[in-house]
Length: 373
Image (cartoon, rainbow, N blue to C red; front, side, top):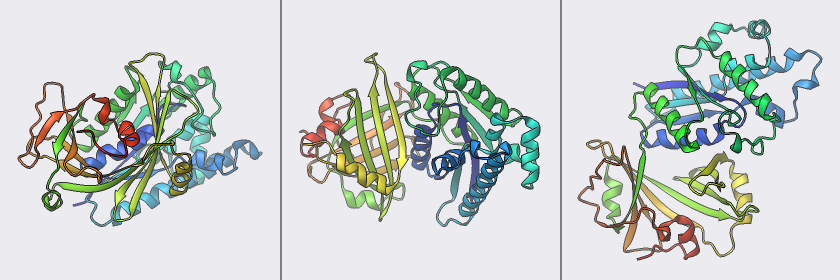
């Protein structure tokens, strides 16, 4: 039987949705979920040149937006039902129908949905769960920026007010969860993944990552394992105008089907904290970004073997580099610091290299894509 969930990821301005969408797709892909992202309709309209102020009737834009949103969601749900070899499908809506209520009165919203042949109650109940990321303007002001979304223009106070309106727009949903700015941004994302895991009936996200240098594995054995997935990764580091930024683009996939992402890791005034911004990009954007590759740094090319150990619940990733024929890298995600790594017999660990900067991908890129001994 096919399992399909449709959820909403919403929030205030600069709440981290772009990075969260990428993390959701990556994390739940590891545990067998095919993820479909329904992109934010308002940003699509605005960046295409259609603005709310263009119309005498202020509700005209909202009706355009609702019709576009409903049509996109229907298309994605239809695709989810028809997909082959996808027993578990997660449809993630970057904002949902009720988000429009933050920009109009409830009476106006009800009128809009009636005029397009829907109802307010149907709009709320169209989703299995709603997850609201609180704006950085409320609790993480030092990270508040609008640089990553040209369709946004809110100041801090306006962002806070809009955040509250957006939360209120979803009040009444049976599974509404508010993800606040407590701890680091990474903590925020982990709380989000944990809340989604509860809805899907999956284990909560891992907390601890460890890295090991291992002997070169038997690739034929790995490829024959039913619980192992092979993916190709091409990772390129880019030049940055900000010395505190580490920027990279990545191509990931297999058999000619790839997903492209851009990641910015930004150090703050506190040396123990950094912000990581990750978003999906198109193939054309990826190819254009390669023109700005870091001089002297090779692109990281590696084959990753992802293994889910059902007995222990541990998730293993083995990275094999074409320039290193004797060793490879094992990364494992543990549930807690007390969790003990259970190494399968076919993996021979040489030593742990967690925190060893020589094994950072950026350093490997400058060392000819070769692993240190």
